Amino acid sequence: MSTLKLVYSDNYDLNLGGHIFPSRKYKLIRQRLLDEQIAGELEFLEPHPAADQDVLLVHSADYVRKLTTGTLEPWEIARMEIPYSPEMVRAAWLSAGGSILAGRQALKEGLAVNLGGGFHHAFPDHGEGFCAIHDVAIAIRKLQCEGAIQRAMTVDLDVHHGNGTAFIFARDSSVLTFSMHQENNYPLEKPPSDIDVNLHDGCEDEQYLHLLRQNLWHALSEFEPDLIFYLAGADPYQEDQLGGLSLTLAGLQERDRIVFAMARERNRPVAVTLAGGYALKVEDTVAIHVGTVRAAAELIAS
Ligand SMILES: [Zn+2]
Image (cartoon, rainbow, N blue to C red; front, top):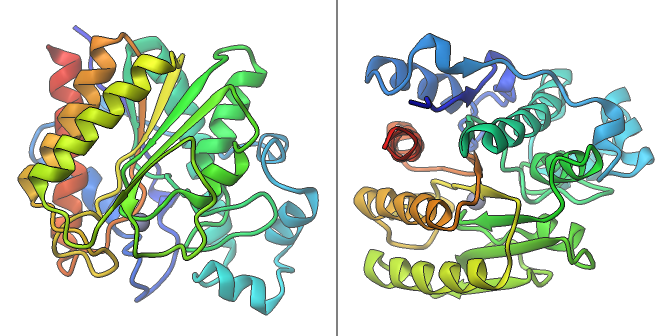
């Protein structure tokens, strides 16, 4: 029987202090997975930071230099909306390494989770919306470069549109970008993904899950990816401070099951990243992410 591998580092914490992005969530998720015996210590894999040359597969040399040498302009840090620190940069590089590792592991086992990553608002030459570098895009390009995959698909169910992802892969027919998000929310400008499912404010479980089934089924029928990166944002939750949808905890759990079951049905490996989550109570955000891991663990064991 396969067991689900979970990529994690204590240094995923972005060192943000009292910021609305609860970057201590990573440690809390790990602890809860252990407490609930969804995973044991042996299931955790420690990632290496991505190599600069891997980051450069997506990002401009100038931007990477500014990040690594602490020479971003104040307005560039303001656009990123998180404080700059060497720990933040280390966490970003580690998250990218983590997504590469989760991708490799998913290719071996069918399913793997990076308990971090999903920084889908990062662009080649700048960061925004709490995202410094685009871990998923780096992982896709890296796995393509080493010949592990040819075609990839992103399934982005964070409440916010995957603008960085859409921009990076706009003219790349080897990567299908799928984003299902609240239309009236950040980012203001949404460069088109290959498939955008725009949701109205307050969308509830039933309609959300119907649209997901329909659109994901269609996408997977049209495009046969060698690997899917699933950005399992916790922020479509009804009590999210930065989201305006009305999904329940049960609805989010069903969302995850649908993604994993559809991928399994078509024999497509899935690497999960966590992306956003800003519930009023951090334990709700943690519960949603833990639910995603539980759904993945149940599927891989079945
Ligand atoms: Zn988000």
